[in-house]
Image (cartoon, rainbow, N blue to C red):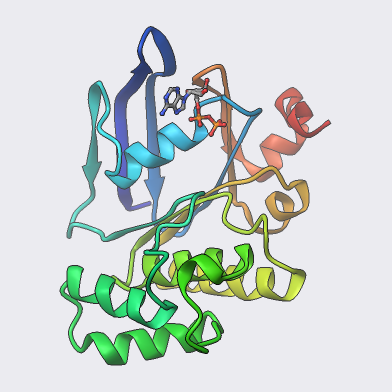
Length: 220
Ligand code: ADP
């Protein structure tokens, strides 16, 4: 399988606390990878490093052939609170050098089904903030979508839509990596599961292997 994004020996400490021990992770075309583990296991740290948003202390992240594009949906709102969703999307489209920023913003507002009623980012519900985060990540037409607990505030219908869009990235030869605390979401969407504990990967295998493994207890 084609490798899209590979972390080699990436690690990160905060002060004297090692949040992430040297870790390898290869993300391949066609995969939907669930990243699970207790709070503080290092999942967000690893995803932020994969996204290029956080520099590792050591190790490196390599892009596969053709320089795949990477989209990141962080846990916290990534938008400007004093702009409307449309203004946010137009701004990020310009930053990403997307052709025709206004048209791109319009297309994404519709794609994630966001209301455009003049409300500012800070006035949006958490669910709409998450949808705007997703729209921002989709602007650059990513080959790899990195999602950090993206659906925690979404209702079931919005969650389905979210996953349809994730599935589209996979279906066109991309990959999705998502952090989740939700067993149902994992069983439904993941093709591969990576379990983290205390800053390291303790399991990495297919969903079928995961279901037979003792690490499946993380949700118990
Ligand atoms: P997870 O996503 O699995 O909950 P994180 O990657 O957020 O784990 O955190 C891993 C560890 O690093 C935790 O012990 C957390 O408290 C610590 N940590 C994360 N971000 C920071 C930060 N900015 N400053 C200090 N410690 C941090």
